[in-house]
Image (spheres, rainbow, N blue to C red):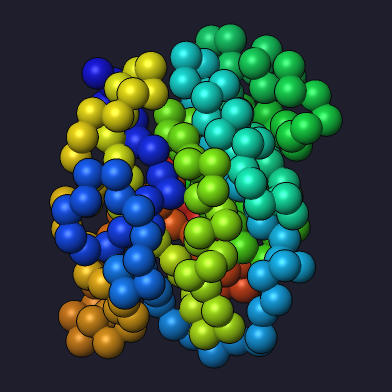
Length: 212
């Protein structure tokens, strides 16, 4: 089994349900001051970063394109792959925005992808991860004008995308975690693909170091 293969979209942050379906009290939310949001008009960007993961890349792109939420764009950044990744990316034509760069590191790929994102909300999907078809709809359902980030736990999958059981991280804080951050400076959160960011918030941290 390849290390770090996940499926995102469960939106559970508490309990131990094997399929990780969302409930309002379990969704992790980080609050901020913001403008009112009409989810029917929100533009979402899914940015996939890749380096030499041709064997998984197609499944990641397919899962992004298969989202039930219609108002989104899919941006794929190839960070100097030497395998067949770029051929796979090119095969999607105009359905995605394809970007290619020398191998400068994951942080550089994030910077390039974020620069091209036009959505109000952004999800950075690792190229060996996949999304549930309704993941974006459920992320947006958990967001409101005060929310900066919505997070979910990830289900473990094998190289064929079959569920293995188990969630990552094993445990997460529930609800609004802002007080926890203010008190301790950190909290239990998921890997990259489990984070759905309001663009105006994450923009404060870009550009990031190339090797981040």
